[in-house]
Image 1 (cartoon, rainbow, N blue to C red):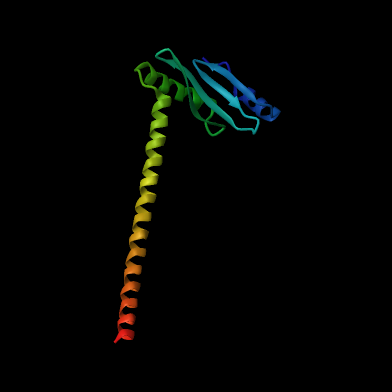
Image 2 (cartoon, rainbow, N blue to C red):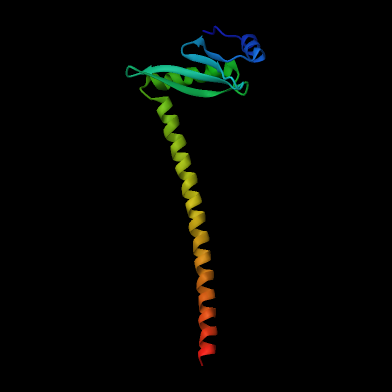
Length: 133
């Protein structure tokens, strides 16, 4: 497998110029943005459609770990799983969960404010009643 080496990756990063998709083989691709962000991308086809899955950033994910991850993702793809779509769906579910928690917090805060307003309203009504009598 591997056409890339850790030494090459470090050279490209040190050079500082963007790298657009250097392949290690079987779809594992190394990219380096103009901002200096190095990442691993898996390029694959499923159902005749070309897809990409960002695996992680380098050096947090080493070349060896990226290769292992590609093997695992390729097994999923071989079984018909669209791993990029699964990642997107999981991210959306996570965001919805976070929004649900924020909504719950807001509802709780609104209920607390409503209760305080009701208490203030009652006090004002008592004061008005005193002045009217």
